[in-house]
Amino acid sequence: MGEIPGGEKPVPPAPSAPERGEHRTAIRVAVLSSVIAGVAAIVAAAVPGVFTLLSSSDGASTSEVNTPSPPGGVPTTPGAGTFSESPTPSAPGGTASSSADKVRWAKPMRLTYVNLDSVPAQVLSSNSGASAWVNYGTSRNVLYGLNGGVFTTKPSIAAWEGAPHPTRQQCADLISTQGTEKIPIADDSRFCVKTAADRVAYLVIKRFDSASGTYLADVTVWETPQE
Image (cartoon, rainbow, N blue to C red; front, side):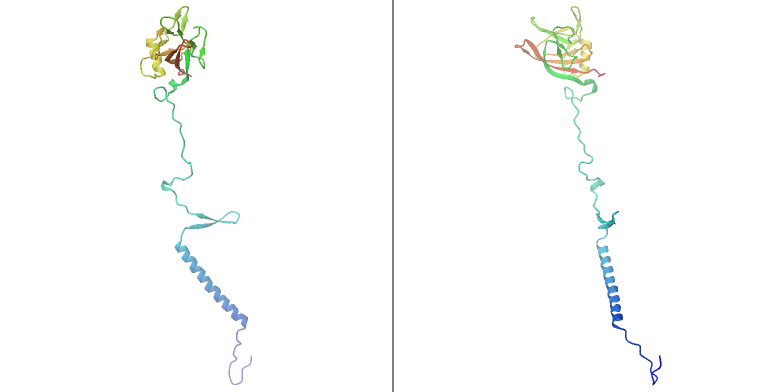
């Protein structure tokens, strides 16, 4: 470029209109970025740890809220750690039942010739095979135990006069020490009976039924300890 006469240097041309517009846009972007960064810093300082943005495996975003744990750190899942427990069946007298006092069956019945080893009790036509039987029609009705043979009876019954509801072992011990062949029977009398299968039964005489000519009794039969 040649010098201008008179010694003056040439003046560079003024920027064109497009160059001035780009310069203003760069200034706006810088200012906006500073504002966004400031707002983000304020929000982060005000609510730290409220939520964390997680990316799922398929690219979708989910938010996970920090939920406080219940007291003691125990999960609040409905029904967790709860269970229902049925009460243990009680033996006669309100004591807890043991394996030695497992009831085979219990029900009211009429006392004639009865096999207490069968379930339910079997009514027989004679005293042959009967665990216990009642001889009616005499001056005193009498309860007999196991048939011991011709005209004999085993000492397999005993009158119970203790607590209203003996255990199996109490009845067994009574028969072992005070067992007899026959005992007069009456209303409200109670008996321990040993069967042919070595089971133990408890009879509570309720009343004499004149319509049938027999005694009504509540009968409980326990299983043996081996059953």
